Length: 304
Length: 152
Image (cartoon, rainbow over all chains, first blue to last red):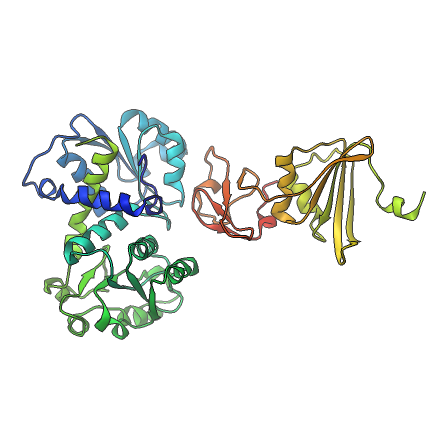
């Protein structure tokens, strides 16, 4: 593994290797153990777009392993506003840092970055493209919270068309032997190529428009945000958003051992009352970004 | 001189591209990037011996490499390439769609990084299936209707 650009570059064995390494990082990630395996190493975090969890968890991961962080959290105060190309920025940062984490609004930006960096590049989201570290932390959460990573019935709910995390997650889960149900409003369905992949893999459960239809047979309810800007008018948005709101009543109709995940940020799609239910795992999921990113940094930068 | 020779005059040296899909000869020219000062004959919607219609393109004093010639398959999959020397066909082969295409096509995704002001060539890899599906190396999206995506 030289770079982390898309989860599709990972074999099943490599995915499991990352998850195993992440598991060994949890105590350090929680601050209960100390590590200096990346002491003296510098991580360049280049974020051209807003981010809370991804940026902070990468920074935490690097610092928990004894390394340090440089970078920017928006292009406003950089030469990017003077028209500097991404290629030039990457060339420069690869001279300063030992690895680069990149979030960029254009699809394919991280792949391009690998051509101009002699240091490892980690894709922290490229437009509507890939977000591989989110997929890996989702898989890690599923494994730690259910004790398994295969044979599960996973229902993905919400914006399955534009939500960048769900496409690669669906493919990775199918590859690992899980069945995927798709619950989305009209116009926000999973892209055809992902559905075809699931069908060919024999891992496509069912597609429907209401979470109530599948809640009783779901091991993992993976909820995504329905973005207001995808709807031509506010009334239509509110009508759809209301149908996809996960509340205590809906959760009560599911199995007791069902878990609820969400890549966050959430807006209204999960009612705050759900946060205190035992099924809610989305804040644990957000925490898991730290050990998973620690594992990746450790593997790329030669930590032990 | 017979009427047939008047229509499709033979050339002494150069390249003849036959069995081009009808109406696609100009796209073939674009995909090859042939300089406009070259002497060329273009026959549109000619009757094919195999039935139906075809275009034919004759480019004088230009000998394409096999790699260049294979680009023709991007817009006309069953075209044949004939290299001519001294009025004779010295090599003939079917254009074969290249596995990787660099610089010739643009990505159909306007938000792809390869469509921005970055110092990289576009790059597409042929999909594993039989069809002419090409996938952008950068944004990983399929591009369709390749003739519309020719950069030149």
